[in-house]
Every structure is written in C-alpha cells, then in structure tokens.
Length: 227
Length: 412
Image (tube, rainbow over all chains, first blue to last red; front, side, top):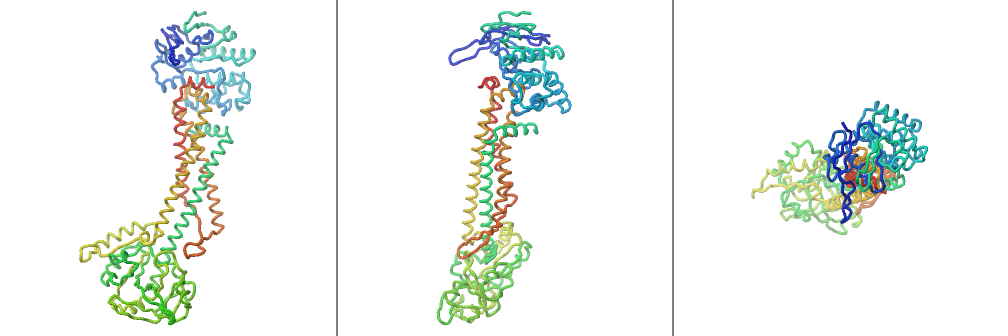
C-alpha cells in the first residue's frame, strides 16, 4: 500500500481579489521507505504540496491519503495529533527551540507530543544523537553549535518519534557543500535502517542527485516523475 | 506540567531584563499593597480597640429610643429593675460574653466652689467597668487607679479648665427624672485621659453615688455595655442577643430594648469603612498593574516567538499545550513577583514595626502603631496576583494556540 496517495489534488489561494492556483489536479503515489524529491522553480507549488502532505493545510479539492488516513478530513486538533505520531519535519532554518539544549530539543516531541516514558525517551534521544554525530554536543544550546550541527539536531528531532514520513523543506539550503552531503548521508542511512520515507522540497542538486524518485512541479502541475 | 514549567522559566530567563522589570513592577505593587493594608488595618484595629476597650464596649443595650436621644442623656428612658433582670438573665445564658457593665449616665452641674460648669457622668461598678473596658484604668493619668464611693474621676479637659487637682473636693448637682435637684460632694480621685468618640470625655462616679445624686430608689440603668470574649464573633453574638431581646415587647407591642454594636455608636466606624474602601481601591490598582504589565510582556513574548509557535505546532504540539505553555509563563512571572513582594513587604512591615511608629488621633497622643501581616492578607494578595496573571496571559496564550502553523513558520 502506498504511504501517500494524491488524486486530483488542487489548492487555490486567494490573494486580495485574485485567486492563485498553487496546485492543479495533481496525482501521485509514494511508496514506504522512499527517498523522494520535489523540484521546481519558486512558486511552482513545492511548499504547498509539502504543507498538504504534512497536514498543515487542506486541499481545495481532490483527495490526499497519508498512511491510509484521508488527511483532508482532519480537524486542527486531529491534524496536530496525526503529525505528532506519523510525520517528522525538517526546516530550512532548522527551527530549534533556543531555550532547550540539543538533547532537550530532540526529546521535545517525546515529552510534549507523545508522552514517552523517561527511560525509553533517553534511549531513543541518545541513539539518534549518536546516529547524527551529536551525542557529544547534547548539553549545548542551539546558539553554541554550527548550522550543520543544528540541522543534524533537527533531523534527530524529526526522527525521534519514529515517523513513517519525514518532510524536509530545503534542508540543505543553509549548509555548506560538505555539511550538506553529511546531512544527506545521515538521512539515507536512517531511511535504510528504519524504513522512513523522506520527501524533500528542494532546488539543491546535491539532494536531487541522491533522490530515488524526482517529481518536477511547474506552475502547480506535476510535470514528470523520474525513478 | 514540569516540562512546560521548565520551558516557561527558560523563556522568561531568555529576556532577563524585561522579566526583571516586569517582576519588579509586580513586586513593588505587592509591597505597596501589603504595607498599605498592614498600616491601615493596624490603625483601624488599634482605633477600634481603643474605642471599645476605653469606654464603649463591643455592644450596648438600652431601652428602646434611648440612642436617638443619647445627647440628652434622658433619665426617663432608663431600664427598669424588671427589665434589667430580664436582660441580665439573657446575658448570663451567653458564654460568649466576657463581662458587662451597668451604667447610669446623666448630665449635671460641676462646681469647684469658685466656678461651675456642665458635666456628663457615668455611674458604674468599678470592677464591672474595668472588666468591660480594660483600658479604663490606663486612661487614669493622675491619682488612684480605683474608684470608691464618694470619689469622682474627672476628664482631663474639665479638670484643667476648672483648675481641679487630685484630692480636691468638688460638688455635683443633678436633676433626677422627677425634676428634683440634688447635690453631693466628691473627692477627686483621678484625672482621666480623653478618648476618641462619644463618651470619651465623660467623668465617672460609683454606681451607688449616682443613685444617691439622682435619688434613685430602685436600680435603674441607662445602658449596659458588653464585652465579648471573641471580637470576631461580634455580629453573630449581637444577632443572637438581638433575637432574644426582641421577644421582650413594650406596651405598644414593639421590642422593649435596643441593641447596638460599636459600629452604630461610634463615628469611627465610618472612618473604618473609608479605610476598607481605600484598601479595595489599592487592591484594584494592584490588579491593574499586574494585568497591564503581564499582558504586555506576554503579548510581546507571543509576537517574538511566532516562528517557534509555528515549529512546535507543526511537529504536533496540541493547541492546549501551546496555550498552557504561555499561560504558565505568565503565571510564573506573577508568582515570582508575588513571592518577592511578600518577602520584601514582610521585611518592610517588620522594619516599620521595629521602628515603633506613633501617631496622634484627636486628643489621643503617641498612639503606638503595632504592625502585623496576617497570613490571610498574604494569601489574598498572592491569589489576586496569580489569578490576574493567568487572566492577563490568557488572551496572548489563546492567540498563540490558535495560530496557523504555516503563517507562523513564514513569519520573519
């Protein structure tokens, strides 16, 4: 069964008196444990599609199923709970909580979203910090670590709830070449080890080059998919 | 909850200067209110104590209509022996009453054999009067701290004006209720300090002397002053006693007696009420300070952390958790301000108490202000601050919890 199934998915925004069609009748399916990249120029609908798959927004029309759930029918609270259990997010600007240490940032979803027991929480957080090479930095605050390290912490945070799907919006945009490859390799390793599906919205040829499936979006239309 | 508290406190410490300024404002407000409440309440309680313990008693019982004519000290509105016996029976049935004093109050002429003036006198049984008005003896500035038959204790202003000293012989002349005039010589046994309120400048003679001057064959009493064991039960006791006394009806079928608490008899009660009103407005000011300062900080906090709110919402934090996060932040700020305010306020009050502040009220000089800070005041003020902090944080917290994650994540 597909992890994500989109049928005639459309999203229209209203900007003043003008209606903007961000997505037009998009159809696609993504299998579990995939490494997928959505590429396209700015304004092509990549972020809109990521927001819909992440249950942060609702489609204007069409159907979207994530892990068998019709996410367009979820209310705000149900959508938050669904995200907390099924989806991990990696942001372009890392978006770590500045008042929490590296360890606490990774533990946050287990404490305030999933309420995991202390022992299991500690084990999961330390394992992931070890996997992303940040175990020795666990007591530092975000302003005490580099951009690449922040993104590795963000990856650990996204994975700590064992999500089936991780959505990453331009995850390497603020990283240098070497760090970007290191981050991509970590995600690929986790995909192989945990069977997590990674979906990227990106311009970055480094990620595009590593993706198993590439979807190109142009003016809200899915132009082509390359395997 | 502890995790939310930890995040809230870290966020407060993130903007140390702002947090310190706001907490200081709350602290200062709490200190100001506690000191005001302590000083005003101490003043109020001390004055009430002075008035009731000097001469008024906690409750007074008269024949119906007496208080309306109290300035004339009417002898025609005295309690008859029969009425007195019924009242005394009712009083003895009430264990809450510590003591009571029967008084014959009358106006007369006072002469030092050179000059004559008016005088208001109380005929009392000294032992009963001392039990009912414990400060009575301390008001005697000169002479014996006692009152025997044939002796008079004069108010100081009258003694000064008439140039009378302790040991001098004076004459009191009075008209009784039948219009008959009688006089009696007295030896001045003491000079009495004035007290605030009605009756505060009266002289005292023995109850039996009053009967003799007024040629009173049967024991008739103008008023009965009562002292309670627990002043806090004033209204409960007075209501119970009133209900008992109301069963005694006069010939017109109306209650034969009237009962008044000190509040109805002393004009200081209006000052006490004014103090209560001022205290209420001071508390309102504190509420306004807390409300505005904490709401301001929390609105700023939400505005500054829009992207963070978007992030935690995106990763699955439920709206009520986001609301709780900001609510706890505002509450922590208020709680910290309240705790600091209580500590500082208690220290200032203790310092003022040690400084032995005195004040004058009316003709009473050098009254010592004994400051205290009751636990219920601390709890009340702390509760006000914490509840208002929660209310002040509610709107910003609600706004944060309802924020659209996409818009919040886009916020720059």
